[in-house]
Length: 461
Image (tube, rainbow, N blue to C red; front, side):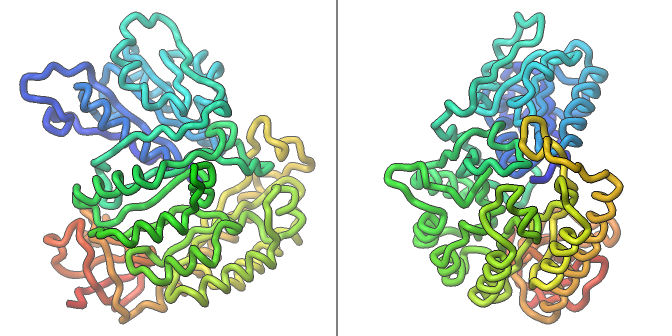
């Protein structure tokens, strides 16, 4: 998962806050969100709940009565970012109440509660209570911890959402938790066991987003490929997509990351036979060396992964495949890194997400020796990122002068001033022409050039 800072803003107008003209705000709230699409979804749902309860959303960097930091703990850097944001909020308004929630809050609640300025620490399974906790926070004089044992949580807490402010594409969280316990990963300890949103609630949530005009909805989860395993009766991601495609939608659907062993022939057939589903799969590899994969506790080897990618490319025309890959896992030799490079170099993938290994407290990999120096990790990461640039270009050039269905975003490219968008197979496209009336709609374009990592597309109508 990505640990970038995804959102540090809100809108301060009464109308955007959902307040009636005569309503008194319950207080000003600034929200910062770190991490993955699941966190982004949960923050957006939290914003809606706060608005309904008459809180006024303001940018995180401005004076507020409350600051909420929705955290990530995948890497040591993400934990560092959290501490930075706490200090920033405390400096901006020393009298404000600061609430820290999310994955870092779940696994290090006491550590966070001891930091200057922190009023509340809220676990992942209590995010749906945050608005009420803020409303009842007047008597707080010291830090309070609202964190339960996440492994005792067996219910999927759905936080409904209709608006995904600042995004042309909407996310919908349909799964939470992970049962895999890869040796490097802290996420199961932050998210608990696999839990799924029942199918009818998925369809209701999709219909609500579709009715708000979203033309692309990304289904997301912590371990999306295990969707439905816990339900009664049990189902799976392929079956719910098949059911979804039988209904009438005015939006396309994209999947977020899905594990190799969960990409079945059934799932590939559903994607292949339904234009509603984007031909795009993001499939973690982590390492191309079998010994390292074994130490990581991954449940496949490099031959299985190679065969899977070739099978997908044969089954789905023009499919884009993204890959998560980790460098510098403990004990990784130069030869083992080269095995990863050579595998990825030979595969027809569209791009790589490259992560240097980050030791997480309490995980088996933290105790493995030798640990790889940061300088070596960074060198290996740079090599794979350069390979990713080459992969992106090679994949994009296949689509020059071919029709692409692009969803037009409301933001413009800073260098060119052109509107931006993504194709059905996740190609970034700059739209050369007047597309202002097509914002938040899907248009058919043809690209006539590729420059600096992006295609330039003109209307094909």
